[in-house]
Amino acid sequence: MTRRIFHVFLSLTALALLSAVMNPIAAGQDLPRLRHILQLPEPNPAVDAGIVPLPSSGRSIFNEKHWIVSGRHCQQRRHGCDHDCCFEYVRSDWDGCATESSDTEFHRWLKPGVPVCIMVHGSFVTADTVAEDSKNTFRWLRRAAPHLHLQVVFLTWASEGLLTLNPAIAGTSAVPGLDVAILGRRAEFNGIRLVKLIQSISPQSPICLIGHSHGARIVASGLNLMGGGELCGVKICEEPSHQIRTILAGAAIDHDWLCPRQRYEYALNATECLLNIRVRKDWALMIYPLRRPFSKRALGSTGFTERDLMQFGRQASQVCNYDLSEMIGYGHIWPEFYQHQSIADELVNWIYFRN
Image (cartoon, rainbow, N blue to C red; front, top):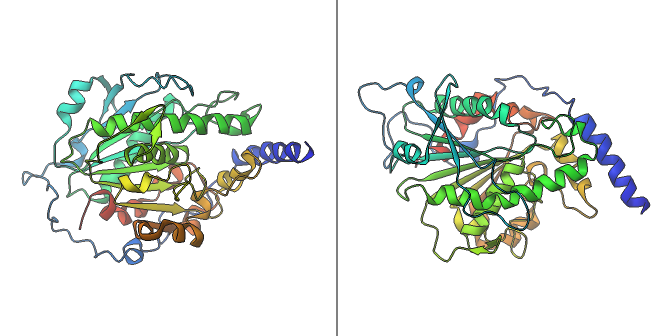
């Protein structure tokens, strides 16, 4: 009992500090070269094979749209995952001017063969801030390669704190550790909605998934379902039909959950490669193990360990740690990533499916 009280005390103290943490690293700082880590070719303005170029008419990225797909209104309980809940759709432009739309319009906008990037946010993101985050994420991604096509989709879920004075700030929760635990389980259930969105997209379009914080848990859960696992009584019998690449940032999951015989052991079956962005001093993830006794360290701060890589066996070649500790500092929230344009520039090969 004494040990449990000690864990709760540390959780309360550290999460309160988290709400006041600022990013100490200035935007524009030099970035470790991802293409060197992954042995990828230098960027070439010439269009790579298999990628649809922008038309010669000189179409501008400032005229492009991005979409917000919402499952916030769907059930979020352990029992009754509400498999048939319909998404709500919002279309937005470069300036963030949003218009409510429909499933029909969304699928009419999607162009088969053009890469799709699905971004999934983490916890304590309110409906009021989704539009701003989606706009800035869209700009961040498109500025990295304006000469290439990309269809950007922002998947949002009910991620507000349940016991907070301010649902966007973990430190205002009466019991922050409980809030985080509830939202973690809720994120896992939303994996089925990510799969539903992916299945609605043409298999001709390769898909890059980006999951931040608990959004990484949604991504891992969805990949696990597509790779042969089970979620909410649902199991997919068909082989994954999409070419999928995955990027996790600030991943709020145990570092070994993708290993064999662990929670998301089938996830790597559904993605050709997975890049884990590691920030060693991430305040939110430093206290991640305190959410329950004997919890493992977070993937977003620890990365895949040597033991994890050994357990992956042949699948170890599919995963890679990418350390941005010097750039992000103690930061965790998503804006502390997209304020650095150089990060998106380094991720072009992954997101745009360049050879």
